[in-house]
Image 1 (tube, rainbow, N blue to C red):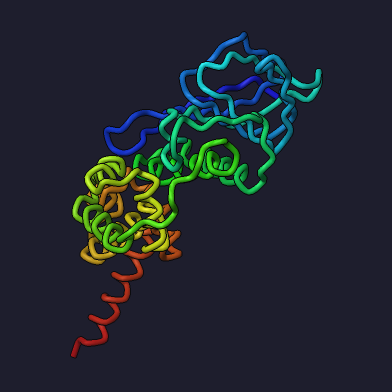
Image 2: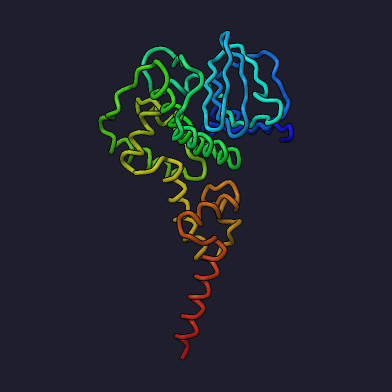
Length: 282
């Protein structure tokens, strides 16, 4: 296993605070004692790491989740002399874990967690956001997952799950996203305007629309993109006009929603129209 540490910086909403993601693969590296201002949430994906923490030792294995609280000193190194260790970690501001809880910041009595469903979700989200850290997607996915982490495994109490007027709230958010599709407002600002926490906004939206805000907006953008492609614009032009980061971002969502690439869709539509035109010629 080669020694490798790849950092990606994502952003929680347009103009929102940064969030760091780490992809680490180590054979021999041992960390010096250190602490972070944020919660460190890691998922072991290979090998085993031994972490000195709170006067004891944590030994990770594939699929385990580790939660290290802010300002807690810790180290980390290979659990065996031969296998090395690999993990995916994110460094979350405390408020992200407190969004769906009551009272003080979440406290994790046990830093090593066995939760296969959440571990898979964290790993997939980490990989996808590291590849394309779209601000609205980051803000839609991570607070939801981190709230689940807090609610399942910390001492914090959950906020009420019922959101009064959820349908009206969700439709208000939907309309704002549609109106500002090329530069959507942050969910934190929308939540503040509506007197909600970001988690409450996400819950109301998902309950009503069936998908999180970023997924709804991406599908709406695809619908708008179809119209522009049918008018003859090239995919590279269309991507920016409907708010995707680039043509690759447009293509990824276009294929998810319609099963074809934008270029293939544009060509098929033009071929169909050309055929209709020939057939109608006297």
